[in-house]
Length: 140
Image (tube, rainbow, N blue to C red):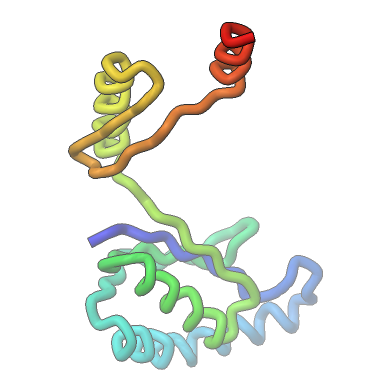
């Protein structure tokens, strides 16, 4: 399962306190219906944490889902549930990111511009402007 972060804003930045309070109160009432609709559409989704925030975003949900399509469903259902703005982020554990960086460094040294990472099953071609200019100078 992949980890996702759902950031939710209930009202625009210039909303008055009455509008904000009304939306927050309504969210509490709609929350169980929202969770039920997510379970109906993506039963594999598992919510890990739910936080109310002080700042740019009003709420943050941390959850696991099998893929980006389920994450998109969670985001869309949040919008239909009354959220003014939602944003979804993929979260990678810090240790896993360090492993990815290490594997790229090792393979990158051996590959002269072509980075191949078999453990991640992807290939990334490196084509920098400097390399292209150097090649055109050598050819000309």
